[in-house]
Image (cartoon, rainbow, N blue to C red; front, side, top):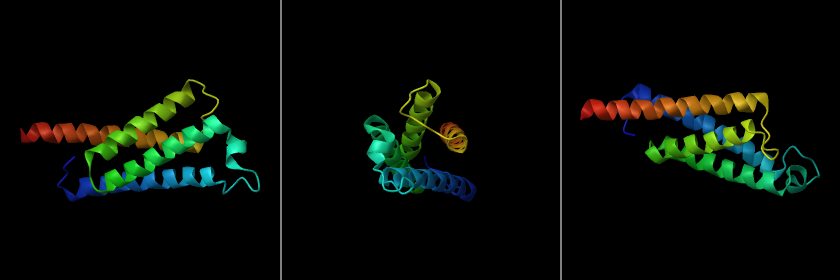
Length: 127
């Protein structure tokens, strides 16, 4: 993803910051910041904890990839967010998302789709 324009670079960085904040929020849940004295593994359950850990790490790595404008960042973020939303929509009891979290993830997914579409469009224009 080789965006030369300043506007596209800002757009990518904004998406990266949103992904980073969402990943850090998930990391805080993993560390039990809001659970008090209860362990996050016992609060969430082992499977939900593992899902949250995988999606958190994927989102954090994707944010770094987007920040450095690597194409794998957008792909990783798109795949992880799509899988997480599909698990939630198909009723997996281990994936819990609030209404605000769902909306943020949906915005991220649409943003990544727009990034990938623009990337392919710009690549065709140069060929």
